Image 1 (spheres, one colour):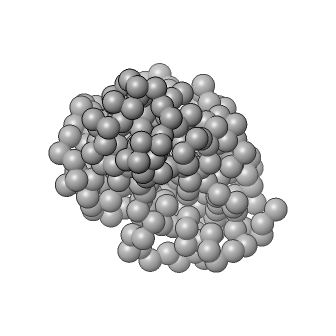
Image 2 (cartoon, one colour):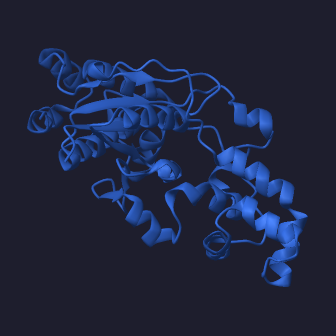
Length: 294
């Protein structure tokens, strides 16, 4: 086991997942259920991986560079409900009390910050990295010392994806996840992919040809062996496939300044945390927190 174990939280995704996973909860008229669920998942992840360091990343409400590439990026998503929006500030107050560094940057998504931070820390060596998220978008950067910790059927179930787990589930390498999504699309982000190609066919094509580029190179020389209907869909929607590939690609070179030492978990003032938790009605979480500071 590495000397350091860093958790990078995909905070917006995890808060959203917790909001929908738990029944409504409020304290003195303020919705708090999503923050409570977020902390339950985070505390479990900390305990499971014995985290020594934690960093939190957030999306911003501003458009990103992907919106500039594709006007309809995430266009079908409804605005988050007020009961969820009001909890983002609460969550940041909680993370601040826990002395967990927070990162967000206009024009980029949390996934880009996560990919950048994970890549930088990974290159320094000596640290095992766990991305804690409510979705699987970060599978593309899973590697030798980068894993994804996500939720199972409930927020009480944690699943860790390493390289072997990705291959077992999808039949492809983590680095091929973007090629895979370029073909099958991603309905949650309104990424088109190639109409008519689902998960199974996308995986088979990437297994066979290695990447979207290789697949289209073979199609161009008429050496690709695919069913006529699939071939027609691929040729007709080539632009969509390559656009989709660009949209799902995480930017690993965002300009962020990381002070790794400041992310060591446990450097918080106990009284400040207790006051914050009590102010939200999270009294029961105080003792749980004391159990997971390694």
